Amino acid sequence: MERVPVLKIGDILLVSIQIDMEDQVALQLQEDLAERIVATGVHGVIIDISALDIVDSFVGRTIAAIASVSRVLDAETVVVGMRPAVAITLVELGLSLPGVRTALNVELGIALLGRRETVTIDGDDEPADDGSDPAAVHTS
Amino acid sequence: MSLSPDEASRFAELLNRHAEPVVARWTELVTAGLRGRLSSAELRRQTADLQHAFQQALAAGATDLGDEAAAELRAQLSELSNGRARQGFSATETAISIYAFKEATLEALGDQSDVAALKEYLAFSSFVDRAALFTFDTYVRVRESIIADQTEQLLELSTPVVKLWEGVVAVPLVGTLDSARAQVVMERLLQTLVDTSSPYAIIDITGVPAVDTQVAQHILKTVVAARLMGADCIISGIRPQIAQTIVALGIEFGDIATKASLADALRHVIGRQKRTER
Image (cartoon, rainbow over all chains, first blue to last red; front, side, top):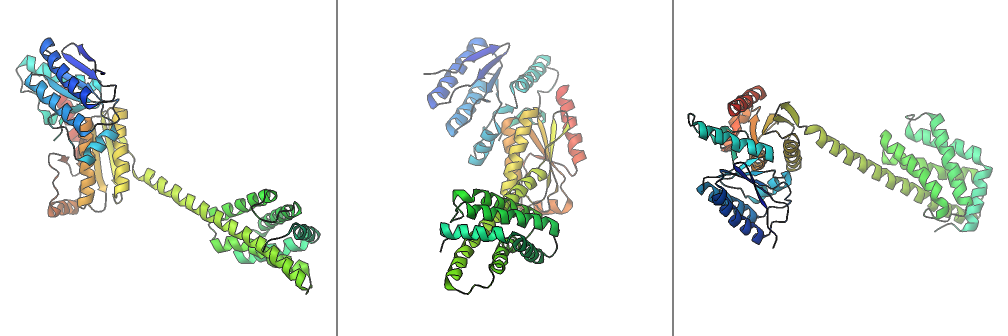
């Protein structure tokens, strides 16, 4: 079975999905990520889906589940690079990715996670308010 | 009733012999039909070309308009109706240019009152009828393609996505927003967000005459899709009456920022950009 590689860059795990997301692949990714987050102790996960033409309801739910699991493990998940066609389809189907933050590309995603980290380290500011973040839009 | 090769060649010979008077009479008839909207010199050139094409086709033994020998004639007819359709002539005016050929030829035939001549003329007449129908078909096709082009141009014209600031794009919506247009706007806006990596989009509805639940639904879908991709949308240009309608209809924009003017929306976005840069 194909596996999605999980790369560690600094304090971030980068997952770039380049293969068709079959249900098994998605579940495997969910397990792999949880293990890697614990093993590496990172605080951010970026899932790049710019190569995905189709995101079905199962993959959508899995991504939402990954985000929830990561949050429990104190890592913030950002989904980046969603294609317009995918976004339109999700909206038409009435599917959303609850609790998942999104950014237009990997660069903006890293910037988004980086901002949160600075705030956390300084500790002298309120944690970044999600609603006022450019790329950090909560989907509901 | 179709022409026999023998009859075709005889008509070709006839047209050749009476070329001058036929073209002159034909031009006269067409000029009268078009009521001087094309110069007679131009019409004369067209009819002369067509007359020549008819003659060539018949001389080459064309018994039907679909024949190989009539290919040149078909090309000429297409060109004529193409020109007429684009110049704004009506279908009748286009077809009459061909039908007039029958009358002109009849006059060239002179006084023959035997049945054989009548039969021949009838066969020739049906040949010309098919030519006229062919022009009519072409005319309709050209008109349809013009309409399709214009619809597309209208869609393109009415949905520009402009870059307003670094990281901010805006869509000034003008005109009624139906499903087809909403789809185009949505796709173009989302694609521009990706292309320019802009995390903010402003949807300006100053030019939208009325906002009903359906229009609101389209706008909301666009905003949600943009959020899924990681960009935030602000709706601006809400006129007082529109605001009243929105409230009266009970449309909920939720946590989507709405501003009265585009300037307000831009100020809002730049403020948020500054806050996140800190």
